[in-house]
Image 1 (cartoon, rainbow, N blue to C red):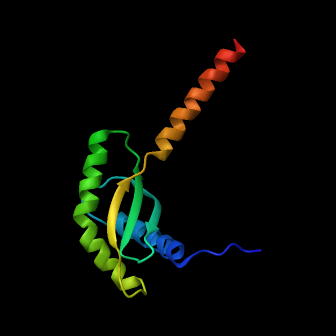
Image 2: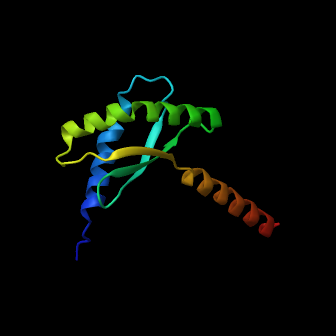
Amino acid sequence: MPQEFSRTQRLGEQIRRELAELIRRLKDPRIGMVTLTEVEVTRDLSLARVYYSVMEDDPQARKDTQAGLEHAAGFLRRELGKVLHVRVIPQLRFIYDDTQRKAEAIDRLIEEALKKDRH
């Protein structure tokens, strides 16, 4: 039986795809290699939490990217309004997602524990 997705989930995925393309075309030097991991839209469609990660493992690069995305939020929202077929375009809130880094750290710890067990 196919899984049904709510309207907010479908809209979140559409926003994620459109934003990924828009961010790729931004000329802001503060924004490096950004991956949008998820977009959560509130039920009233007033806010979209955009979770992102960056390729660089540098805290300054994360701060610069955050500043660049926040600076471009109005432009990105306006551009979303041109392609989305909804009455209200949600406000965009960018949130750094460090899940991948945490997962890699856990993987390293597991590998180290396995090596110790072997010896």
